[in-house]
Amino acid sequence: MSARKTVLSLEQALALPYATQRFVQLGWRVIRVETPGDEGQGNVGDPNRYIGEDLGYHDLHSYYIAPNVGKEAITLNLKRPEGRELLQRIIRRLGVDVFTCGTLPGRYEQLGIDYKTLSQVNPDLIWCGISALGPDYPDRAGYDPALQALLGFTYLTGEKDGMPVPCGVPVIDLKAGDEVFAQVLLALVKQNEEQGGRQIQISMAQCAASWLITAIPQLQFSSSESVLERAGNEHRSFIPCNVYPTRDGHVYLAIGNDLQWAKFCSMSGFEHLARPEWKTNHGRMKDKEILYKEIGEMAGNFSTREFVDLCLKQKLAASPVNSIREVADLEFIRGYLVKTRLPSEKEAALSPPAVNTEFLMENDFHLPCAPRLGEHTRQILTEAGLDGTEILKLEQEGII
Image 1 (cartoon, helix red, strand yellow):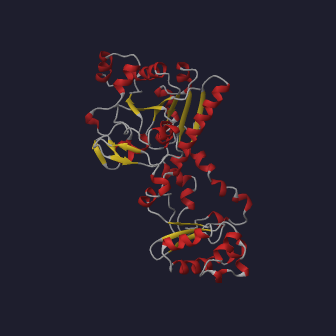
Image 2 (cartoon, rainbow, N blue to C red):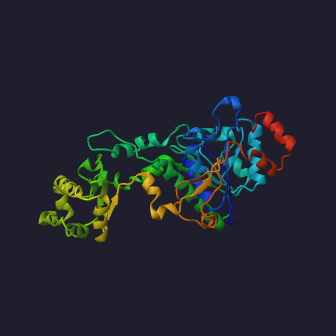
Image 3 (cartoon, rainbow, N blue to C red):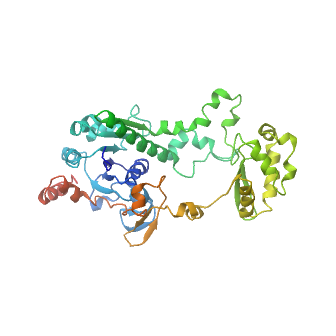
């Protein structure tokens, strides 16, 4: 298996662009495919191009940047047979190793992107499709917030007596994207053992439900479904894990076992909590509301920094409730933020990679800015063997 692969990805929104961004961070070549359009058509291509702050171009807004840095972009009209022929030509001439798509499964054959068709072009192609519920539900669309609601994430999140609340980040998009990344890598490893292509189908719903490992099993194991209700900031099983107010903010205190509770009760000012009936988690569970009130009142006597430092001296897990600006400035985060140069020449710091790859470290965590719509179409078609006259004709006919 050669180190650098070429990925061709029919992608938009977040789940699949996030997955292919992880390939970029390995140093792979990622070419995103979008639908072409005329100036008068308004917002064409990936809708996320037009969300967030305007960065100087109509098709380059802030929400689109981070998942797409380091990529190339082409436009192909796959509704036309000429566009489908071009797709196959690119796969063949550029030696594409991996094809990914985030299209409704019901449209695979119509667009000529199904595994059967493309594997005839490259028998060793790794093909991966991602959709809301998988190929058994070929016409079911899905976005992260709706899937969070469908799969219980929203039901479990929020205050006990309040409205259901979606998570603050699109966790289902990101979980599904990570599965695309993992399954493609696994397919490439298997390809070393046995030649041939692979077809991978990712259901965002099943990916998300796999994370309900602390919830779905409780339907069998627990005598009460109260453990499957919204619980606000408290942990459903470990007491007194919760958010507590300080003089200048909030902290999260995580006590994971009875030994840690004993250490907490040994801290100056907290000794009175070392009562026999609270020695075990079972006992603390019975009086959890009393404990939340007691600890909350005591935490209010400290600044956030003071309370956290006191806990850290006992090797307890306590953290400030940080804003995103504060997170970006954490010493173990800020040195690994991926950076890019915007069209304005301003350098922008993005999110860090999950893992510091060799490629990113060699490039000082800098990646080229996310591409404009169709920015590399001419270059890639030239690479695929077309001349300027042919490319111009394709433009005039609305194929690219």
